[in-house]
Image 1 (cartoon, rainbow, N blue to C red):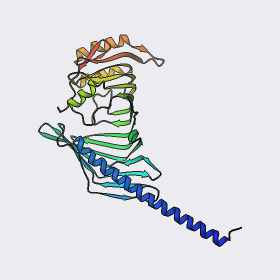
Image 2: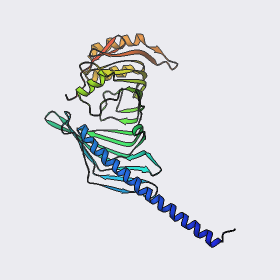
Image 3: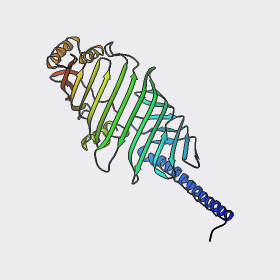
Image 4: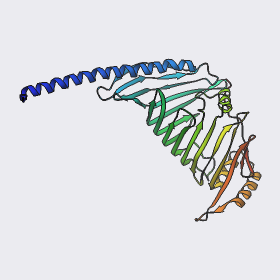
Length: 340
């Protein structure tokens, strides 16, 4: 039997209405799940000693997304040894109703971070033209995270650093290690350590594996626990282009019993004379020692196809000393962390 056109149209319309009603109900369910997840996450942070507040949560985005906006988010760790507090203008989380395992976070365009420093405080102002984080979850845990920031400005103690583009990635597994990557492009420093290096860092990049995740709230005790559990940063690729200095290499890094950097790298360096000059300008190495160090490094270097000296040298951080090959470059101080 052939259905009459008018009846067929009515059946189609009813079917669409039913589908729309089902989807609408599901959207409200997904919105409630997403909102509850945000509230549960805020509550769970109290166990970490972090207090999170905001001026309100709003839900929208129907029909193609669930969007939760947190107005004036703020966080603080008043009981943590390195007490700090943070505030942003707004934080927006977005998920697709058909893909709740992926969360997109539109980060605040303006942020303010206040750190305790002795008896006083250090205020850091952060602004970005755009900052988006994408989080993928699997079996209830974070599997992958991608952060992209454009037009970043960081001001601390009246000194401003700008970064044209910053990209970071994090990929976790149920067991170690965790893969981490960071790329910074076109960074302009407040001041130049020397004319040879200048203020502009054209590019800095690291691709590494983290054996054990470093502590979220760093302190001397937490970092020591991470180290004693086998914590190490395994840098598979490291590169830097800064003025006349260009280097690339790989190695591992952790901390020693006195919280000083400890590790070993193999680096291929061009323009190392600019690095030595920068260390002299920063009073990290005496001019007399720099001259001897540069002589030794020149003997170790080889010429590339363009005639530039390229130094392939082990870089070692051990017993509070940083060595380029056999030459001591500077003493390494403990990382300034609060106890706790």
